[in-house]
Image (cartoon, rainbow, N blue to C red; front, side, top):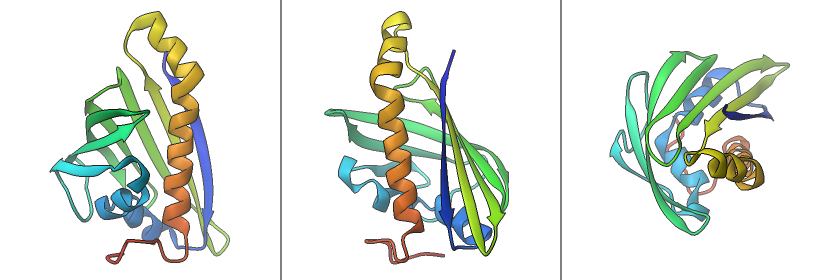
Length: 156
């Protein structure tokens, strides 16, 4: 049974702008400098689209990870979903929604995941991974909605 959490972030950006920024590989890399995340395969720069994959390499919890994700669904500019096709999780799905909210956008991220290793994995999900992943998404979102994200020159 997967673990799930939801993050809600408000932005003054219009939905289309935030939708595109959220699927921008360069913006993602800029938001994850602390974990030295980089795109090493598939789409490695610019905008990723439905059916395309990206392979990430990063350091999390002191361990180097590689994970390949595919954009499995896209309804511009309201939502898209990405899912792990290869990597450390038994299962991982991240749904991104962009809802008009006054003069801006409410971005809603729903993350569902399951760790491998049976009962031990379920314990790690609850004790460590859920909060760790939620913090990563919150930091990423804060970066995206900042007036001018640092280290990102190519907003499109």
